[in-house]
Length: 133
Figure 1: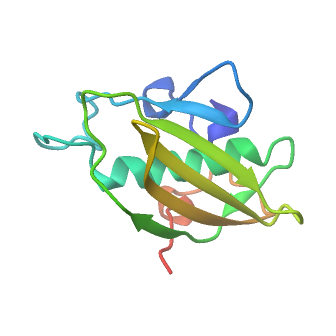
Figure 2: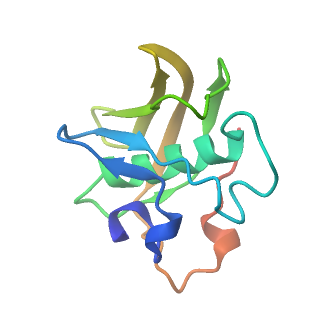
């Protein structure tokens, strides 16, 4: 959980796979915040949180904080098909690109800049919230 910047398993949205830098998006439709009402698709907030968490995990073992996000929504993420998250770190390690795919098609991408200032569980939630650029 620490790798994803979360204290509770219920709040971790990438699920492990057998490949480094690749996760399956967990779509827990009972999550009280990420699914705050009935959807026929995965909410954008879920994809943004998945990008944030995947970027933090991809930067490991370096302890980092997300300092922004530049995201593109291409298609809806459907609830009835697996959604795969893939990460690629920049050469200098200062950014992580996260791509979400369904049916082998890109549906979402985000470039996530990072800083060396670690975010801890004692940091207020607002301080670790994504900033959109």
